[in-house]
Amino acid sequence: MVEIVGVGFKKSGKTYFFDPGNETFRLGEMVIVETARGLEMGHILIENKMVTDDQLVAALKPVIRKATESDMAVYEENLAKRDPAMKVCAEKIAKHNLEMKLIDAEYMIDGSKLVFYFSADGRVDFRDLAKDLASHFKIRIELRQIGVRDEAKMLGGIGVCGRPLCCSKWLHDFQPVSIKMAKMQNLSLNPTKISGTCGRLMCCLNFENATYKELRKGMPNDNERVQTPDGLAKVIKVDYFNGLVVTRGIEKDKDTGEEIFSQELKSFPKDQIIRINKKKGKADDELDEAAVEELARLNQEW
Image (cartoon, rainbow, N blue to C red; front, side):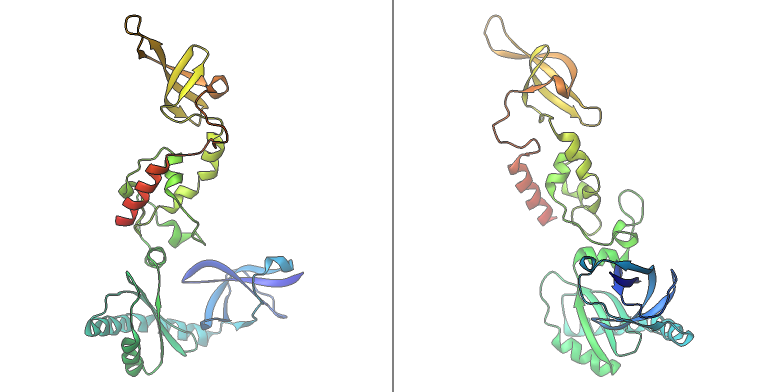
């Protein structure tokens, strides 16, 4: 067992473990810690507690100290210098004619480094820009390229649901999201409808995926032929939440012998449905792979 404290930072929703040493920390206290980027100010999210060794992903770094009034003053000063630094960097980017979008700027608490965050469609040769910025600010410069999801996380915004973006409020890690999840939830397969502010598939598609996957077990697909208590039928739609399958009966025309569909819709519980077209070894949640590939292509274009 190892004693830790959990620390959070402004630029990330993650909680990182640090060694508290012999100190006791309270929730919300500001602390100075050493990270891979240098000294940073964070806030306590998890008070002193014991965890098992397998819960640690890396060697613990110590908490340097509790933030002092001097640290808070430096922090406020750094915030005040952010906008002017952004303006200078934007001018330098235009001067060097670089295809990059400036997102944010951040001074390290010890004044050792100034970090600029930017997004771009591809790789950017910013070596001349970095030299120009270092010459202007007389400080070590770091230019860090981030993805579109991280850009949305840093900038924030309002989603199509009318609420603040999950990634900027509480979502700690980005989980993989696929078109298959949207298909499973019977959502519109229109990239503009299922894409978030960042232009990628909405993270919330993953929130209820496990529930839909469980509800889908034993359910037929749309347009599938099934055997019902009233005979052969075609699946019109599936009500996952109520466990019902809406069908239209299949009959044969007395004159031509051709199959015709009944005009009456009938609903049956899924345990009364026999899937006659289900191939051996085919998973219940198998989807139209052609549709999946097409939506992936459209989403890439979008």
